[in-house]
Amino acid sequence: LQPLCYPSRHWSPAGLSARACCRKRREWSNPPEGSSGAGAARSPSVVWKTPSIMKRISVVTPCLNSERYIEQTLRSVAMQRDDGVEVEHLVIDGGSADGTAALVAKYAHPHTHYISSRDGGPAEAINKGLCMASGDYLCWLNSDDVYAPRALVRAVEALEAHPEKAFCFGHCPIIDADGREIRRLITFFKEFWYPLSSRFVIRVLNYISQPAMVFRRSA
Image (tube, rainbow, N blue to C red):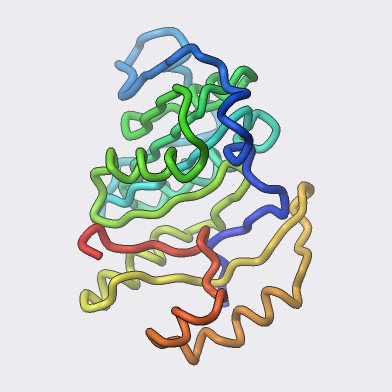
């Protein structure tokens, strides 16, 4: 099995209380070419390629004071575009007072949307992002999780090949803050049920890892 995502054992900073948020609201989207400022900064290590093959997939990332981990999240999403997938990334910030906004700006792309305002926590942020999303396929990735290389292209290929299916999911190793795989027994337990997947099993067992799941808008 090839992994789709590497979730961290650290909970996303988006789970912190919204009372700790900064009151200031910041928004930017689709920075113009050649402009300066936070919304236009580009990472020199990321090469953006023109999407060539597939439908759009929207990734929602809720965050709050996520400076410590969010850069690896942003980088892993950005690199999915190299595979020809049109990725819309919506970063919904609960009002970070650290360097989160600057890091989001560093990986800005015409299909990156950033909103920073106080909210009621990660559930509200995710719902806000899903309502804004324009993709044919939807998912969310917390600000301390990362996608494996080619994760999204493989997910979209699977859904395109099976139009009758509502969603897909894949291998999801758990990693620590240094990227080392941990909790292998939990991963083994979850993967044991993959071949036995059914509506009943999905309803009664917690074996699908959310970061490695992509679903259709129509679902």
